[in-house]
Amino acid sequence: MQIRYSDKSLKQFEKIAKGDRKSAEMILNAIEAYAENKSGRLDVKIL
Image (cartoon, helix red, strand yellow):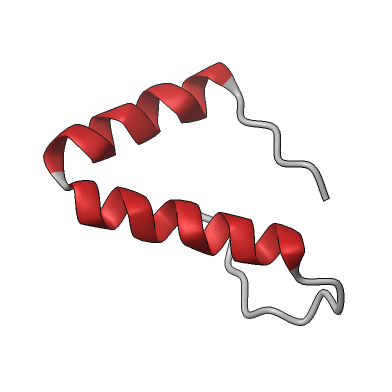
């Protein structure tokens, strides 16, 4: 699965990264894990 980020989401992510680098890395890792999961069985909530 290819991940595409909107301009708005990129701006929000930059704000998060400025304040808390560790949280930003955790978010990116979770998004990448979701994209790589072939089974589609993840616990996901719409925010």
